[in-house]
Image (cartoon, rainbow, N blue to C red; front, side, top):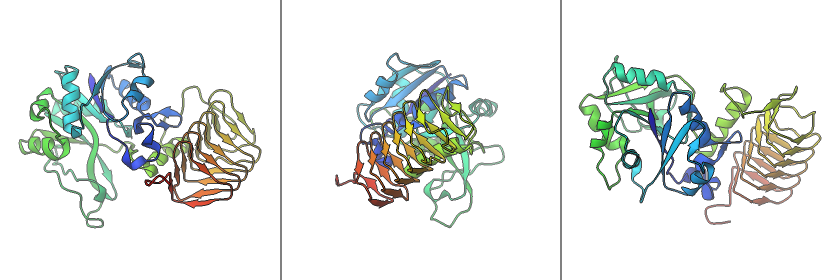
Length: 362
């Protein structure tokens, strides 16, 4: 079975992390997000994936120079211009010559959805399209997808005002599509699968929703990107951390040779070539390859990308440091700070909830 993986977005909500790299190439516990998505698909029998590319597309080609990700053969479909969700699906599927039932996934969604069961559900109902659904407590940021007792989609409801609707099913971003769906996607213009294609098919009674309670998160915001990693490190989401990772008795997982104080307490993951000084704390955190956490520093439920440095006695709490970012001695970052690649925080600074550099370049 083939899949179209949507990875063409600019990742605006994750800036400044995405100023230099597409969000799906950002690491999730030291493994590029797209590698995790493709490995998940391979586990459900997907042997060919078409990457629908746009923003900084060369990063994907550099990551998979031989056109393969493990058992999955890759095709690159670079949009000549942004075509929106359905336009991107249509462009990629046609370029790859897909003429059979196929899967569509969003490359920034991490999930344990049972795709095999979803395909069986799709077949049993003779659906033209099946949408994965997940229940969220506050659906105000999403459109609602009510279904009948057999799973047939009854309507697509616009985002409700906050506080007006309780827990509800939303579109979780994985689709099983028959090739006939491509007939409903005009070529050469922007087309939304959520606002145009699916409502038209639902009116014809050919769209079903597959509700699942499996783990699901959209990593498109700093909070979600951070939480997806904390969930793995702390065991809130069972699953592989990093291939070859070795645990210490204190609950710190290491990959390759590291220079971590053996008394460092976890749970945490420390990447190859990283160092953690005496008396440092890295609870619930991911320390990327080549990072330095100096003595007495505290890194709490945070993510440090490759080469980041946390100075002596500094605090990094619920925050994200981009590649080679530096936090000076005694500085404090709290409240979901996000530092872009190479950004330097001066010693003793106190930052709360800031993204740096800011949009105005400061």
